[in-house]
Image 1 (cartoon, rainbow, N blue to C red):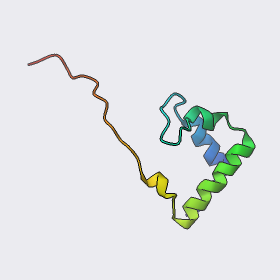
Image 2 (tube, helix red, strand yellow):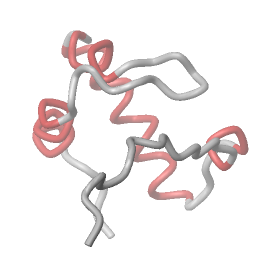
Image 3 (cartoon, rainbow, N blue to C red):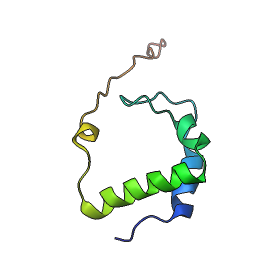
Image 4 (spheres, one colour):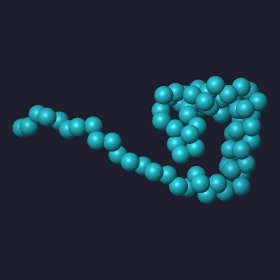
Length: 77
């Protein structure tokens, strides 16, 4: 498993939907996309360190997934 390249990382950052809600950290996709090259390089170092060590921060293991009711099909057969 090779580390991520800067090109791979920046390509994926650009693909993020900018208006998605942030997680518990409060960091939005728009913030990630607005970061300059130095910021993205630091993030790449972090993610590659996690990738290579196979250890992630414990806070990242906690998430809240809550379904949002969007209604149902009002047509009844």
